[in-house]
Each structure stands twice: as structure tokens, then as C-alpha cells.
Length: 292
Length: 156
Image (cartoon, rainbow over all chains, first blue to last red; front, side, top):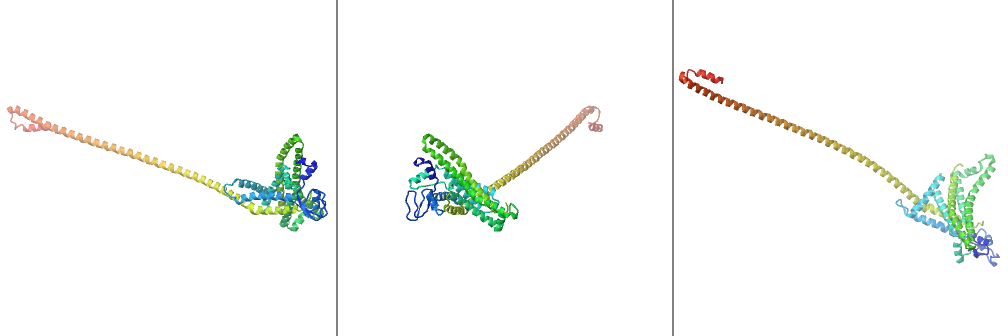
């Protein structure tokens, strides 16, 4: 709880740190003043240690929650798919069909080529991102506090507030965009699309710069939009949660605020999942198209 | 923002999820949806056909009914005509029979009358002769006036 921390800043920082597992070099001074004798694989305490671990460390909480949520989605959809009949659908099948028809309509609306990958990709993106965002609605202290009592120092339960997760998704989509651009237009066609428009050919450095920025902006905007929205939403929940430590009047007010923000957030998490999916479809459609 | 190997782990997880979804989740459900769509379309087409057939059948039934009614009316008409004919014939026969019997009766009556007249004439003649004989017995011989008497008898 907020009152367990030395300051509000500590509380916020603690809530924004992932459970990172990585390698600390020998001679590193830990958070509690210990100096490591040998190179050690351990969980990071505090931002300094995360920094010191470098790239080859992993956010265990992000991975566990994202894989768990994705597996949950696939488990229910696979259960429905195995028993799918053309006859009267069961409740689960009904729900799954409703989602799939929604995705299918979105794909038909935005994607004008034939590719068996795009619709399942869009379904996975939508459901996965939606479920990851949905974790935002759990009160911020519940799971981390329970985990803390079980000896886990840090826990971020909303994977989409971890830029690694959103960039992982966006870069995978970007890789598909590059793959299909080259596959559909050929390497030369893709290059000429980048270099020979919108200005005449002799201005190709300018074209290349413009189109290159446009191309790079796709994955960055895709991931930062989701990350930014979720991070900001989570931050507001944390700030509201700070009020619970300030007496019962402020606490009650915080409760009302949390409820109101959660209701509003239902819209945001759905919208962000939908936007991520739609942009994924649109980018892939552009990768398939011969001309802009 | 600290980037670390989570980025790679996330990408790999994503690829596996998409592959699983594409392989085991999407096709069965979309196939089921397509199959149901086809079933519903077939059902609707069948219902349409059924409705058409019903309409056709009811029209046919109406036609049959009308034909039957017309036939029945014709039969009744013929029967009535036949009945009228029979009655007419019977009347005719009765009238003829009546006429015949009347004529026979009249013939009989005339015959009877003639016979009675004949008998009467015989008797009157005999009476006249007897009278005359009584008269003439005194004056005339019956033989001499026989001609006269015969003539008189013929005139009666």
C-alpha cells in the first residue's frame, strides 16, 4: 500500500519497475550495499541494477503475464474451434464467432488482397492486446502486494505498459510489412517506391529521406501509441491509489475517482486494441499494394 | 525506457501465437460459419420453394374444385332435364291413354246407344205392326200391307 513507502515518489517508482532478471557483473554494489564477489544472475532491485544488466536481461513479469494472457485467449478460442459446428452454437462458440466475425469484417474492410495470414494475425493482435490492456483494470496494488508478501520484489501486471512488449509486437508487424513489400513488389519495386516518389527521380535523396522516415514511423508510432496510452492510464491509477493513504475522506474520493477512471478506461483499452489491429491490417495492405 | 531481451521474447511469443491461431483456431471457426451460412441459405431457398409449391398446389386444388362444381352442375342440369323429359313423357302417355279410354268409352256408348236404338226400333216396329195388325185385323189382310210395314220399319 502507498503508506508502506517512504515517499509517494518511491511508491510510484516501485510500481513502474518490472521484475527484471539478468546478470550483474562482479564488483557491482547492490541496492543494500553488498558488493558482488562474482558475476551473478539475479532479479534487479531498483533502476540502477536494471540499467547495469543491459540488454541481455528479461522482464519476467511482462513475459509471464503476456504469455499467460495469450495462452488464455488461445485456450478458449481453441476449445471453441475444436467443437465448432454449423449447427446451433454453444455460448462460448457464439462469443468466439461474434469476435471472429467482427475481425473478419474489419479485415475485409481494410485489406483488399488475398492473404490467409492477415485475419488470424489481426485476431491474435486484437485479443492479445485487449487482454493485456484489460489487466489495467485490476486495482494497482492487489497483485503486486500479494506478490510482495510472497517474496517477489517487483511486479507489473499490465504487459502493454512495458515498451518491450509493444515494440516486440510492432517490430514483428514491421518485419511482416518489409517481407510482404519485397515479396509483392520485388526488392527493386520496393526501393523505387521509396526513392522515386513523391518527387521526380533526380530528387531521390529527398524522396528516400521522406519515405524512409514514413516507413520507420510506422512501427514506432504503432508501439508508442499503445505504450503511451497504457502507461499514462496506469500512471493515473497509481496516482489515484496514492489517495488511499490520505485519510478516509481522500480515500473515498480516490475510490470514486478510481471507479470513474476505470469505466472510462474500458473504452481506452478496447479502442487501443482496435487501433493496433486496424493499423496492422492497414500497414499490411499498403505493403501488398502496388502504388500508394 | 529500458529495452532488453524481453523484446525478442515477446516477438517469438507473438509469432508462435499467430501461427497457432492461423493453424488451429481461425480455419475451423470460419469453416463452421461458412457452413452455417450455406445451411441457412439452403433452408431459405427450400422454404421459398415450399411456398411456391404450396401456392401451385392450392391453385391446382382450386381448379379441380371448380371443374368438379361445373361437372356437378352439368350432371344436375342433365338430370333435371331428364326428369322433366320423363314427366313430360308420362304426361303425354297418360293423356294419350286417357284419350284412348275416352274414345273407347264413347265408342261403347255409341254402340250401346245404337244397339238400344236398334232394339227400340225393332220393338217400336213390332209394336206398330202389332197395333196395325190389331187395326187391320179388322179391315185388312196383313199380307197385303207387309210392304207398307216394311217400308215404315226402315224409316224408323
